Structure formats: structure tokens, C-alpha cells
Image 1 (cartoon, rainbow, N blue to C red):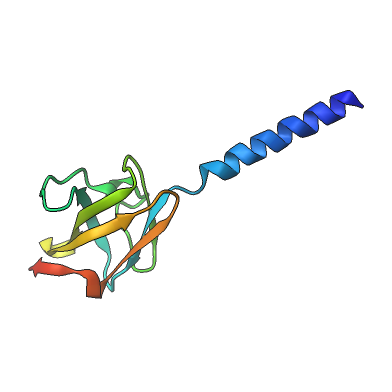
Image 2: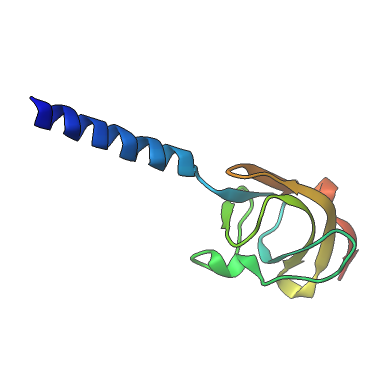
Length: 114
């Protein structure tokens, strides 16, 4: 009987640890186009990090697709968003929270070039 109780306690602890890990940070692409580049910078610094779309299986984030963001701490960021054909836009002051989804829509895009 003690063995069964110990096993149940161990399984409960493991399940709680997995639940606490959450799903991580995710970008939800609500723009009308496929994103081929997504980089973050501290606000106002233009110090762009790596292209995070390379973490996706097809290296792009389609409309209504979510991308797991890794190696980024929660906080405020500026984002550089790139599309096929070398169009780039910026999104300023995105708030990224731990284990949460943040989205980008066409209305968020600023200073686009073609």
C-alpha cells in the first residue's frame, strides 16, 4: 500500500512540474501575409536579435499560425517583421509575457517599406 501511495505522490509531483512549465511564449500571426522574418530588439535600440521564424518547421509563420518564441525573456520589445519580397515593417512596444500568446495584426505594423 505504501508503494502505491509513494508512486501516486511521485506522479502528482511530475504532473504539477509539467503544468508549471506551461506552453512558453508564442507569436500569433494575425497579419494577412506569411511572415518570413521576425526579430526583436529592446525598445528604441534597433539592436535586432536572430530571425525567430527559423525555429518554425517551414521557416515561416503563415496567417493564423503560432510560432514558439525561445530565448526571449518576458518584457517590452520592438519587432521587425519581414515578408517575402523584402518588405519590412516594425511593431513598437510589444509586451511579451511568460507562457502567453502575443499577436501581431496588420493594424500594428508601422514604417513599412517595399
